[in-house]
Length: 128
Image (cartoon, rainbow, N blue to C red; front, side, top):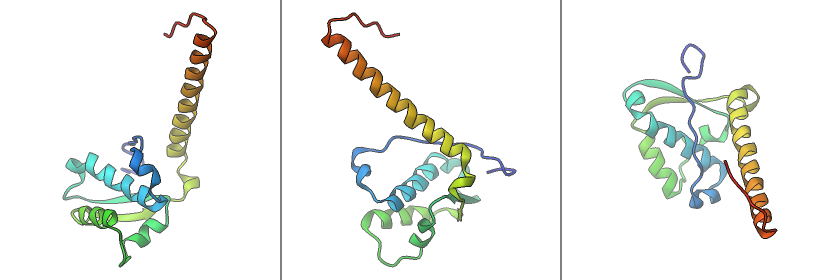
C-alpha cells in the first residue's frame, strides 16, 4: 500500500504438489512469492505485508518448523518487513478478483464439456 492504496496485485495457480499444503503454508508461500516478484523494489526497504490469516503471525515465533517453513523463514530474514493482520471483510478488492477467476475457470470447464458433447453428437463446433 502506498498512500493507503494498493500498488499491485499478483496471483498464480498452485503447482500440483502445493495443493496438499496446509493453509498457513499456502499463506506463507504467497508472501515468499510476492517478495520474489518484487524483490528489486523491496530489498533494503522497510515495508508492511498484509494478510488475512492470523496464524501466519504466530508462525514466526514457532520453534518447531518443517523443512519447507525453515527454508522460507531463512529467505524472509533478508527483508525488513512487518506482518500485519488485515481482516478478510475489509479486503473486498482482492476477494472480488479471486472470486472472478474462480467463476471464470468454472465457465471454461463447462465450455470444454459442451464442446466434447457436441463432438460426440457429430455437431460442428467452431471456437472463436
